Picture 1 (cartoon, one colour):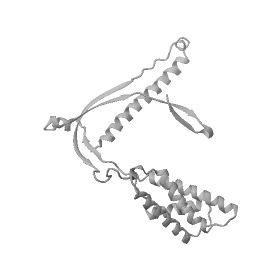
Picture 2 (cartoon, rainbow, N blue to C red):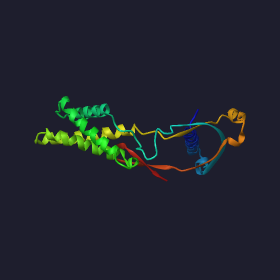
Picture 3 (cartoon, rainbow, N blue to C red):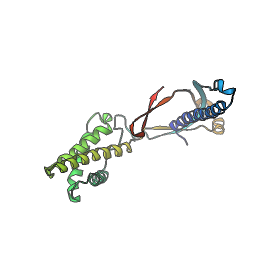
Picture 4 (cartoon, rainbow, N blue to C red):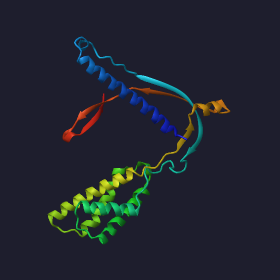
Length: 228
């Protein structure tokens, strides 16, 4: 059974694709107009749909995830010791830090201890992935600096190591977002019609408002999006 969020997302995605197909069709017409002696002096037709209102009925088949993500809990699950060990290993190799594997264990333990402190702090729902990543990387660097040499190349590698640690933890936590409770429903017309009690049907009215972004070029071939 689909989730309510998935169904609504599919409706919005279809509306976006409709706008894309319409714009591509306008582009084809514009090319045809531009190559015609008379049509090139006329405006290219283009239509907009400022609002699309959709009404539908659905049968609620259940609610899942209740209790798995308690109110007030963190938005993401804490990292495990194994996950932190893998991040330390990758960051050490990426920064070319001459740190023996056996010396990585104290770093992992320091990160794990700091993680437990952060996730025990209230209110936990205010925890942010970037904040946790920064704190865990700092805890590991404190331990790593104890055995570091004073040479400048060593300091540079430590800084690179700390940066890689923070980015690794941040990416990990983004993939550990806790799932909120979700409603499951059936929107098939045959199932809705066959439902015994029509008074218990879920009736929704969805209005999609047209909006858009402008592409802004950035350095190195990158781009950004800003509202129209």
